[in-house]
Length: 165
Image (cartoon, rainbow, N blue to C red; front, side):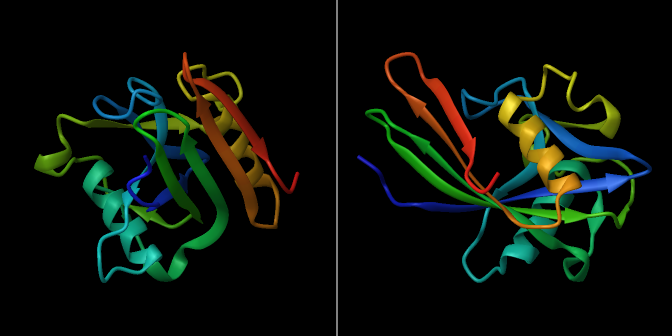
């Protein structure tokens, strides 16, 4: 049973031809020990952009300006199982990233920030394949990406697509 659709954000943050990303240490089975963009759930009263800047700071210690965030993608994440999950994630891009890595205390056991060279995205197998493709799309195309990622039982097989590719 789906408990409701969750609203999330992810920050594609670029500085000096590198992406500020995180290695997820705890949490979702699909991304545990994998490298993904910093992000998380939107809190009540927050705009999407405010949530994106907050999550980026909490998970990496880096600062991004709300006014510099550009909407570049919308992804539906859906798990078809007994513990069904449905999230809509808004991906934002910024090239204005300041600060150094540090992690909020409540995030320290959950994530590890890292820099990933943009030119190594395609070959970095620690990044899920769909995140590699989404990142390339967001960085190289002018339009907003519309995509989905779905997991199916019994073995959580992943099926994903960029719908406006």
